[in-house]
Length: 209
Image (cartoon, rainbow, N blue to C red; front, side, top):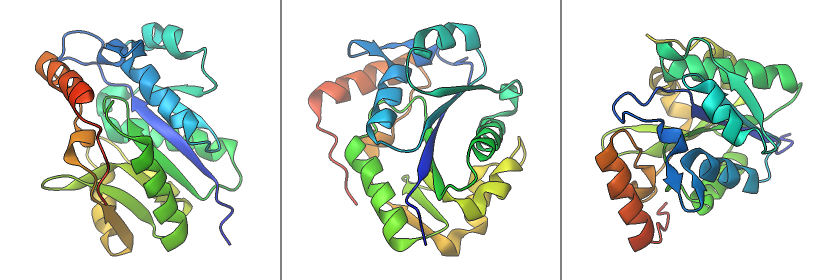
């Protein structure tokens, strides 16, 4: 029987090389992008919120260490998102003897809504799939919830074998939700940042399932 316990992992280890500045610390509302996502994650009232940092660790740490979160340093961040997921899930497994799943969120998608994440959590506990993922235009990915049956597989992710491949292996036991594509926009360039800020003031980002 499920105990309805999940943790959140926010991936924020990248070096923002296409942006030319630390995108996690870009201004968003009255804070920064990473703070916005942290506050959203904390509002979900899950077991704990873990933030995986790598590049620019000290600068980002100094901004976010005031929050009730667990900060993880990925020394192998240059090996990509798979490495950060692996590092994060190992830390989570060390914290909990029993946990039903982990919700993984990107640290550069500031339009993600609480309503959509709560819908994901609701579907996860009601339907009990191995994975709940998000539908993109041509694919699927995170935000995603992985059940504890997938944890070991997540620890093996690396530069050559990422979360997408793991999802494909478990495709038959995965539920794919389709939110408004706007809320899945991530920030890689200065133009992305400007465009997404415009969207944040012109739309209400209602999730579509």
